[in-house]
Image 1 (cartoon, rainbow, N blue to C red):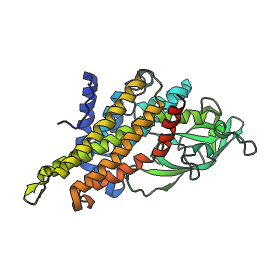
Image 2 (image 1 turned 180 degrees about the vertical axis):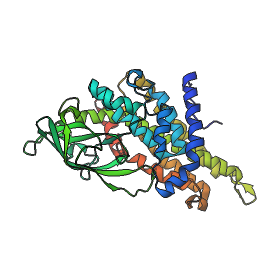
Image 3 (image 1 turned 90 degrees about the vertical axis):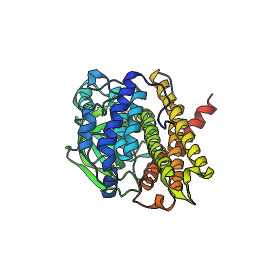
Image 4 (image 1 turned 90 degrees about the horizontal axis):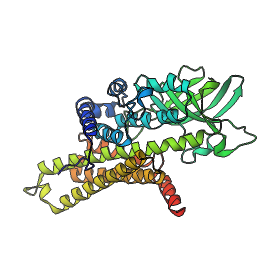
Length: 387
């Protein structure tokens, strides 16, 4: 039985899947345990993913990308995630958040200057929304921008910025209203930040449970002068833009989650075929068979929901609640499946010599970042009660 997608693929999608799988298994999988152990970000992945076109999959050809559909992108992303979740989050954040925001709201000059090299993999993108006191309640962020002639002066700090220490382009959400007259979400704007700006500083690198090969850092803006032409779209619309971009992000995290879960399932099946106890291979025990059956069902079910949401989005349908469902189902499946994988491996599953403990650690954050499971349930519940 195949543990991969049951979705009928076009010849082009099958080629993309094959290319992503070969690259992931040959170039990423052999190194993933070392990168995790050493908490090492591997810059060569940026160029390699860029050369394959995987950092511009959703960007139209006129802006340097491949102009592919969401389903093709998610198929490739799952293969990368099955080899290493840290590499997958590099690809996911870049494709889903900063590039999509620039594509939809950036000026022609911004697209030429920033989006095109991002699509070619020459500049890595990052997304800076959260702050130490503004996580799920992102509208309460406090980083402030004040207009000063043909520039803005930015002050504040952003927390938990994925790949912020290596990004060449960072889409940052900051307040452009005044402390005296706060406008909530309507007082937030988006700016293009580059690390060459005076006053830009990379702060603390987080020591994380999982995704250890993906750097997560604090970014500090200290009287950072940003040219006025770095404002994305309209002033005061940054929060709206960020929420719309996170719709893409939820799909990406869903694919990442499925890649993690699928790898855990594959390892569990292989282990059950070779491990003997009480004179039998453990695959012969009904208790193990039930675990594997439930693991496979959750992986396939989450993938089917994710692919359905992606296909609907490609058709131009409104899929906000469905992307939340897909992210929720996939992330919780990843956490459940990796937990069961450790149980299948028994004591060995708890040891760092075996890969399932790393998959377990990597899975947990999928229930947290780009919208916690609780936030996804709020989005889904509100959509249902508005019917």
